[in-house]
Amino acid sequence: MTKYKAESILPYNGQEKKSVQIRQMFDAIAPSYDLLNRTMTWGIDRRWRKTAVKMLRTHAPEQILDIATGTGDLAFLMHRMLHPERITGADLSEGMLKIAQEKAAALGLQEDIVFENQDCLHLTYPDATFDAVTVAYGVRNFEELDRGFQEMYRVLRPGGILQVIELSTPEQFPFRQLYRFYSGTIIPVMGRLLSKDKKAYSYLPQSIAGVPQGEQMLDIFRRAGFQNARCTKLTFGVCSVYTGEK
Figure 1 (spheres, rainbow, N blue to C red):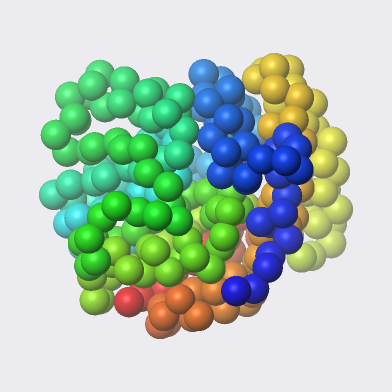
Figure 2: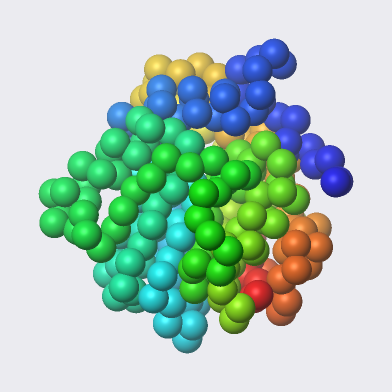
């Protein structure tokens, strides 16, 4: 399998597997995660999610798997906008899942949205289970990108869609330069102040720069078997929405 830069970028050290460190990192920042997201993106991440969910409407998925669901923001939005039969949110971090489950209980959605501890490289779901699989800001944390995409392809039904929302580096001047300064300087400082985790928000800009983008990301879709792979750029290329069909 191809080795990607993102796979070797680690939050803490070179001794433990990436999946172990990612779980540790998100467990640590879970209590402040939602606040950090809103603060660091000036709330624009909500608009990105809404735009992405609108793209799923024509597929009318009834069974949805949300990988790297975190605290469940995308899962709750898809429930509100798409009205599927069931959404399953999967994540490595029990700390993040605990907050997602508390949100679901507060909204009375425990039957409609189920949150489960899962490793995206070893999903426990049978083949062809879901109509759509989504990942928001999570593939850069995969320990093995190709394997993760193969697993997502496996659990999709024929005709199903994979949607990946991921931060990306703008290509045009001056947005590229401004973004690099903001992500490399401002985000780590804000992250350290709000989350008390000195490493997590230094890892973030490195992982964004290291994750495959544009055509390279679409090539991963195609190698996993997806057809009609497309990329839609949002906000001058700061965010990209990738889709592919099984």
